[in-house]
Length: 262
Image (cartoon, rainbow, N blue to C red; front, top):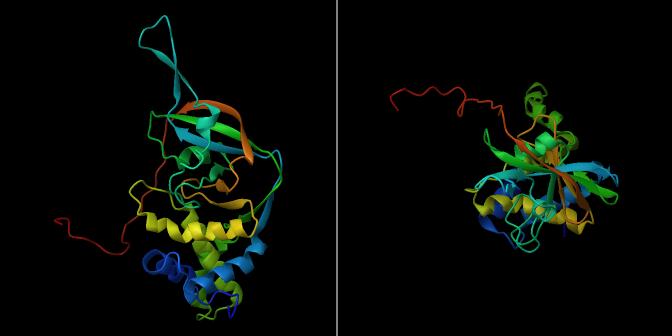
């Protein structure tokens, strides 16, 4: 029996993440059960409607080619066909919101955000599709309050570490948002996806249509993951080429200076 439905620590997400990544994946411990119950009971504060007819975006690296008869060996770039712009049923690869074989439709609120998410290189061709939402959807906005959550730790110093229930909730939902926003890499250990996949399945069990979370690669756009891949359909497609990539860099270990000989 769950004793309480509140987050116990500022970093309860970290404890939960370590638990399901390194200890028990399919048998839930008391730590995991308590954390997920806190997520479930506070999720309703982050409900958001996505109205039927809303436009969302999805990008895929590469394109199709249309042969030019009069120029042997030449072709014209064309966007991937509509079926290629959606995940394959029963053949989905691991993602932050889905285990292998269970497809989720990953979309973005802005075209540029969708393109950033596939991490193209300069000169590469990217197929981009606009999607129309086919019915009213109810999703969990994990990013709600994330900006305030990022400032919370510094603010606590001035408050001498006095914690409120809201502090605990804000902190942990910020961790959740950051975990979903972290870009997927081919070199990732699939265990890294377990914490967010379990939370996504919790939302799905609670009859939500998906989730919304920040993009770590775009300053303004958000990502949207929908459990029903038929909830949005392709409306238009285009091929774009990447002309510029903006990147920012920071110290890997701030405040630690290394001898140049190493």
